[in-house]
Image 1 (cartoon, rainbow, N blue to C red):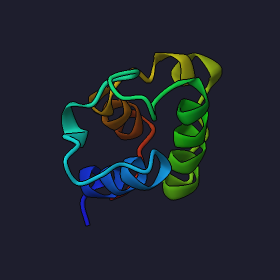
Image 2: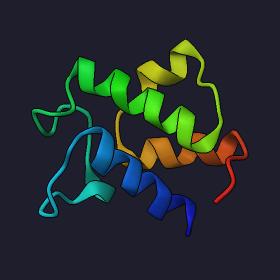
Image 3: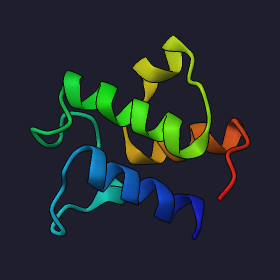
Image 4: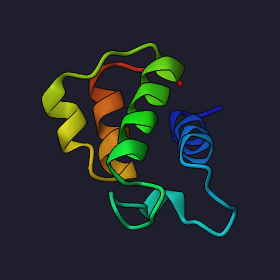
Length: 79
């Protein structure tokens, strides 16, 4: 499974998204579930899934699915 696919699954599970949500184009606060509490839940789920630790600034800057992918790639997360 690719990094993108794994991350999509994390987004879907952490934010309890339906199949109608376009995860790859999702941005912070685009949907009600991705509010500040949902954001922290999502960050924790990503850290668990990919065995990474985000810095505070990275948590704040994670504003979209695409940004999350870029961050994981920079951290050397494995697919």
